[in-house]
Image 1: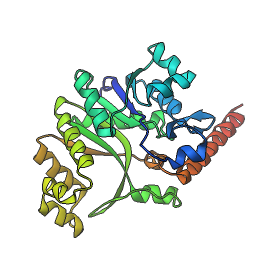
Image 2: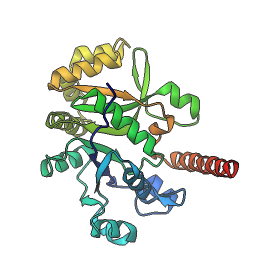
Image 3: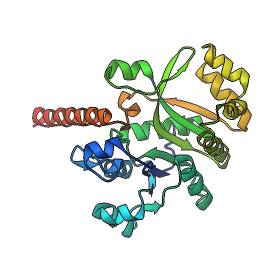
Image 4: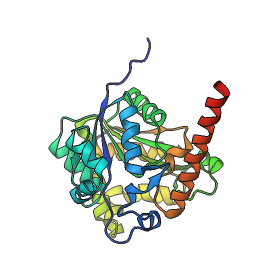
Length: 278
């Protein structure tokens, strides 16, 4: 029996600005990071355009930046005023922004969550993730790329690596909240953000045994997800993406330079393809 196409989802794009100094915004000469130009386009505009181009995304909602910034950026103000995208003010942290959205729009599930600094996002990445997550039929799907895939393609890129028995993984800022139960994970995410400066409280929530297994290198990714699933009473699955660029967002000025180089190479490859095909 052939696979059926998953139904289109709502996409929530997190575009809030962290308080204090932002090295990326300063390097790019813009008020906030998501307005940094990449390939001649502000990052946030690029992400919104990619989501619009996906047949598996029905609606786009931007959470942040502030309304003041929206009014200062004609392209964002036009999108909001023409109701081509929804807009919500950012909360204090990404988890609270997602939580606030689900409280206001509980019917907008499944919900794809991504970030406005995901400058290398492509339609292929979005569709691959949504199709695989749809097949999994879980409460929460999380996109990951094996670190070996990222390191082989971009050894100069410094990424955060989550180490498990059998290998490390990089996050992709792509999540699918598939059912109302997914709000339990969002609540947990909120607690993690709130208690990041109180490690003992966080450890108690995760469990000492699980933490010890992780430290000793005994914990596999599948075991970790199973443990979290059982603790929260939900189903969580990792979706492995074959795209190393999916793990590269713009957290530092060095990331911005790398992303610009990758996009420039993409454009040159496309141009060569057009010439060869003419």
